[in-house]
Amino acid sequence: MALIVQKYGGTSVGSVERIQSVSERIISAQQQGHDVVVAVSAMAGETNRLMSLANQISEAPEPRELDMLLSAGEQVSIALLAMSLNQKGVKAISLTADQAGIYTNCTFNDATIEHIETDLITQWVDKGYVVIIAGFQGRDVHGNITTLGRGGSDTTAVALSAALNADECQIFTDVDGVYSSDPRYVANTRRLKEVSFSDMHLLAKSGAKVLQEHSVAHAWRTSVKLRVLSSFEEGEGTLICEEPEESPSVTGLALKQDLLLVECTGLSITEQAALLKQYEELTAQSGCFKIVVPKATFLQLKLAFNTKIRNISSLSILTLVGDKVEGMADLACNQLKANGVDIYQHNKEPKSVSVIVNQADLEQAAEILHKTFVITEQSQDNNLMIAVS
Image (tube, rainbow, N blue to C red; front, top):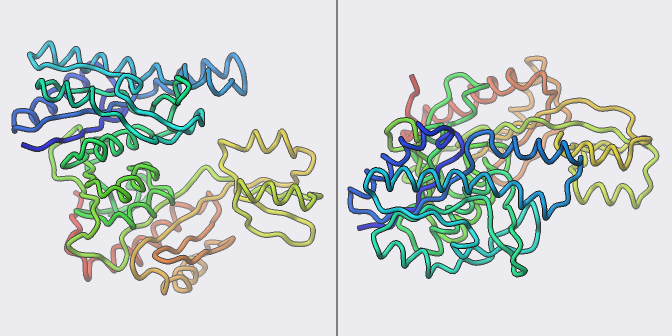
């Protein structure tokens, strides 16, 4: 018998019908002899709806009260899932993160899990219950509800797996694994059977949406085996582990969008230093200071530096990840330039090469890099790739 921690995202529990389907999947795992602990997100769109309500009250809601509001979404989904299982004859209990003993630091809206007191969870598991826990949230030492930031349910599942010494952490989502790039923008992407922790962390950090960056880092640090699976269809998914059976030269291409190039003038040295603590500098020349800013944080920047912002344009960052990509930087840039793609800047780090391009050039640039470096390299030396029809 194994202890499995499963996590279901918002699309997986997006309706009563989907919740009923998830309960059947949980029952199947239990019938195979496994103990099951489940972390659940809010129903699809619910967090956005709650955030919209908050913004109708205030453009900058008080952080503590915002966490109190946003945490309500998960409480709905865990209760409904427990009801579904109980109605099907399976003993289940729902727990908020506070009840489950998930303690975080005191950072509202982007808290970090510090430890989990597992006694209550273990008691219910030992009684044969499926324990369903609210993801995305915790409590601080003062008893305040905190939230973990977008995608935080993944981190909840990984932290639970580590604390409970689970045999595997299964992340169920709306895709059937980790792909060589984002299928929405790149043709002929392929699903990976296995990915190393280090490569997955780089992919997540560089914009791959399938797993949250913090959750991968936590799994890597605590040696929790992760498996990404689809909640809509059967399949083996993608295993994230320390040492995959084979390691390709290029694992994949990550895409990061919703970025702005902001040009500022007349900034003092103190103001420049303050911005560099938050944002990536692109260039600083002729009195013009250029930074890359996520669209989600632009309003905050505009409020502080409106009179000094001269120009704004949309950018994307494309990042090749793999053991041997460093030596491909010049060739990657030359391939893009030869096809008329302007490059603002490229960065080379161990196991990754990133290029910054105009948002309008994203799909063309992604196709070029994926076809040239990911598919070509992996078709030669990576038997882990599985073609997608």
